[in-house]
Image (cartoon, rainbow, N blue to C red; front, side, top):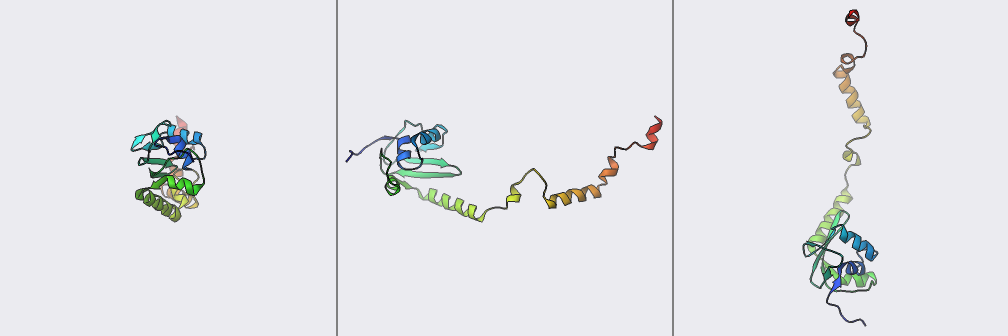
Length: 148
């Protein structure tokens, strides 16, 4: 049995705790400043110890966990989950994000530009008719201007 560790590189711990599939992916995310240890931006060589707080931004979700144990080996998921404890705030934020995603928003409301919808097209056509846009901005030659 390996002897207990008191410190471990954060990239190795993130890999062993199964937050990332490979150590190089963990190091890349750390390099993009998506991982913080005790509120400070981490470097891949940063050493963790039990009791440290790690914030990991995974897409739209930021998971905040407290380090409970260290392991230099990647094991099964149930063993990896014993290496950390997620904070109640992080669990609540994930639940809120899941609920928001479940409720969803109308996809058409997110469109800011592009092809107009049928309703938008009708509004545009109606506005053009009411403003007499075509008659004001005609490209035809005015008969009075032909004498110039």
